[in-house]
Image (cartoon, rainbow, N blue to C red; front, side):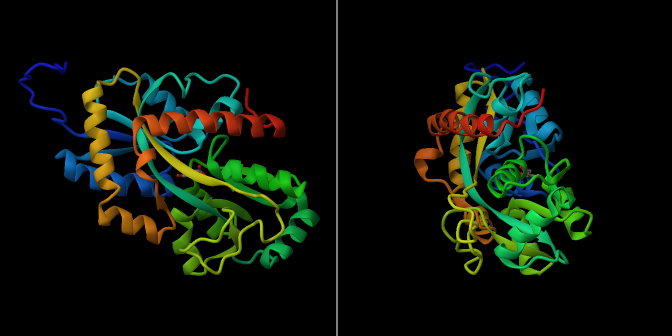
Length: 312
Ligand code: MLT
């Protein structure tokens, strides 16, 4: 057992590798951010950060795992909006995002992109809307399960078009993208951290971005709002969490390493290329994350309850 607050024979924290749990499949958007962030933070911490992909139930299995993990400063979670949507989406959630965690800070904001398979017979947003309305549930929409931002985006898209697609869930949008590239599914709404390389290589059809303004990384891409979906906005944010009860000294050290990484060109340049924006310093703190999470639970809870999507 690690002796906090006393001169330990095991040396100062951290004295062995730290696990950073990712709720979705390797190679996908959350994993890309986690691996790049972990590599940068490891330089400051002097210990490696091991990425652990724990997939399932739209990210909630990973959150549950970390909520129940030993609060010893060696298990952390990186998660996105799914942390805030889970309480409204799951009637029987085994953890509470607002009470079962210690908060480290936020990382980066990421736009999403609406994509079709390369040979989808619909061009531009006007073409997409027409195709979606004419084909309804014949359209296969991939996502990463209830609680994934691909699901959130797809849900808002169907709501705003007044259509019901056939949903095909995967363990992350990495396998969902593979299915889109292989033509097994028709449509995917996914983060630029995974989609920009596929868009640039013209392996998919890009219909638009989910932010209210156009983004620097894809300046020619219209927003979905410009394409006719008034007010459509999904922006993905990322937070780093630990089990509740994690020693404040460990949180402080992990947070300091996080803030250093958010200024490290090795991390920031990669994020910029992938359309992600580092959050302002006020959000890089435990308080900044906690306050934001509370507001997001309220915001998405209201939206999801109105649409009426949930799992028992
Ligand atoms: C992933 O990392 O696979 C995605 O973030 C899943 C999602 O759509 O939320």
